[in-house]
Image (cartoon, rainbow, N blue to C red; front, side):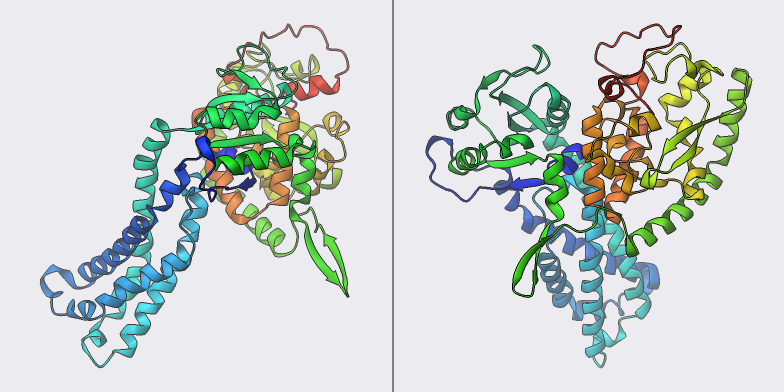
Length: 510
């Protein structure tokens, strides 16, 4: 689900056409919009429950009755103000289950405004019963209110909406996907969608790779939408540049169906474009594809503080891993390798050694069930503990906590002009590619995710990635030991020939 949130950045909701014949119906998002008043009411009740709780904590159950009159005096405002503020804050997205961190952070602004407004009302009425509203109660009500409002949403997301998404998945029609973009389609289907079928002019996806059939060519889209029960159409980005955009948009509009587009690298780079007037001449400004200014300063501060805290808190685990590696195999516990960092500068990356000394000379690629991996190294790889020494790279300024994956020089030498843009920022320990498939992704898909990260950087996005990393590590997704497709491991006793671009893309160079 996180993959779709980051990958499908161009979305056009076309629910307004109400008379399109057989294919018209009410889709899920329209139904969800009708539940927004319930969300507002639940947030308002949680906010007021926080004030009542603050009374109980501050005054005690025996002596709070008289002082509680002050709250009853402003009760109409305590109910009305949060409803108005929360409604105007635009935090009620129909797809809010798909962006939990952004939703939680967005709640703080309406919470604070509601709290401040009620304090002002109590101050204006200070001569009446509201004047006895204890200041300590109002001070405690803000953090308690944040806990209550975020808490009920967390429970709802985990229980109610999670159950609904697992039992009532939306149906999806995929358009324009081929063998090169198969992983992207499989990630979409593996999230919240049930695949109805695919449309493509050139069909080269292997038989059995998808559970649903190939329904025809792009020209058949109107017929397919009228015949099948489809909630959304997802289009591979290249098809929108091949003269098919008009036909696809018209078919979706006539059917009243939502359209998503998986962007190409070029469309992702131009997503930051905006029109500026220079005198009377309109110009298009694309902005810088870097993390600069206050964003860069804040990111560096978080990297320094975060790496220090993590090193200190994880020091027992670091010491245990180092001792286990030394006891399990001959040699030191650190593996050092040259990587390419920001602006193409080389640096030494630190990792826990997971192979026998000297065995990396047999092949630069990591293979499934690789015999060169030690017993300790296999465990460290499965739980991503071998990456922990990179916290020192973050502290030294060579890496960031979040960013594109640092690649080895021979991979960077094969970058095309778009992929080279990923070197505009510091590489990270984790990133979009690490939480959306990791080793299972093709090299092109990793680069696309990295470009999305650069062009859409925000502190919220970094937080989402770091929280998603914990879940991915816990599930051991995308590690060399968890591949699901047939992948026989070749022998590594002989040195491999120089690597082609295809080999580099297929392997795990990291």
